[in-house]
Every structure is written in C-alpha cells, then in structure tokens.
Image 1 (cartoon, rainbow, N blue to C red):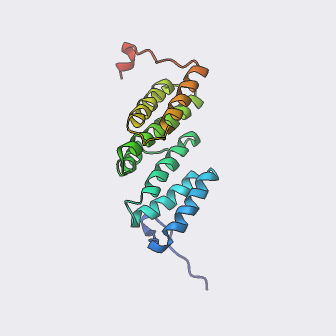
Image 2: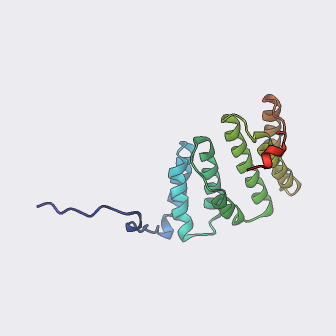
Image 3: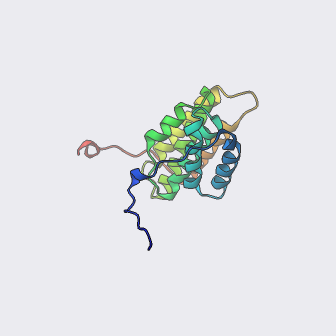
Length: 171
C-alpha cells in the first residue's frame, strides 16, 4: 500500500546548508548560470553561499548582478534586497560602481518597456559612475566606459527628462 503525504506548504521545506568546502564550486556553478542567462538559478546559489558566508564578496557582487539581470526578464526584484546586498560590498568604489550598474540595468529594462523613466534611471546610473570614477583605482576606467555607454543610449534613443506636471502629484 502506497503511503501518501499531506500537501506540502512553503514552511515545510527547511533549506539545507552548504558545507564551507563546497563554496568555491558553488560560486563557479552560480557564475556559469549567470553566463547561461539563468539569473534565478544563480541567485538561489548565491543565497546559499551567503547563508554560510555572509561577507563573501564574490557572492555579494554577483547576487547584485544576478538580481539586476532579472530586470529585463520582468521578474519582481525587491529594491530593498538589492540595497541590502550592495551595502555589504566592501569598498566605496565597488559600492558606487555596482550601484551604477543596477541603475543602468533598470534603465535598460525601462527603455525596453516603452521608456518611462528610462532617462532618469540612466541619469542616476551616470551619477553613480561619476562617483566611482572619482575614487577608482589607478588604471581602472570601467566607470568611464559605463558612463559613456549610458550617454550613447540616451543620445541614440533621443531620451529626455520627463516633464512633471501638477497631475503627477495628484493621487
């Protein structure tokens, strides 16, 4: 006679922890998932890594990237969660640079969906890239490359600041 289980509820599944010695292989696997355009799978692995190594810088940077990869896929990504991970990244330069990338990716997703607020989001990204540029390590022009990329997208798509009217403030 076959034994049946009661229907599962979300709180029935307690996550199993990784072993510390498995972290390098898990990072490699998560990075591969990101490259395969599977940010949800990558994010899950980074969360497992961060549950046992909350200060793992590679996992923190890459979970921010994986979460922002999802903007263009129409997945709900909590801004607060991304900010939590960004705040744990060591280094003012790194935090500024990756915050710029988050805004840039949000802007590109907005542009793909009709452009509402894309200009303002690109503007935010560029401000963060300028902050990163001001404190970048010698020989690192990554924030300049990103800033120029945003400027080109704004020009190519003739984006302008959205005019705000009194109706925008009425609920």
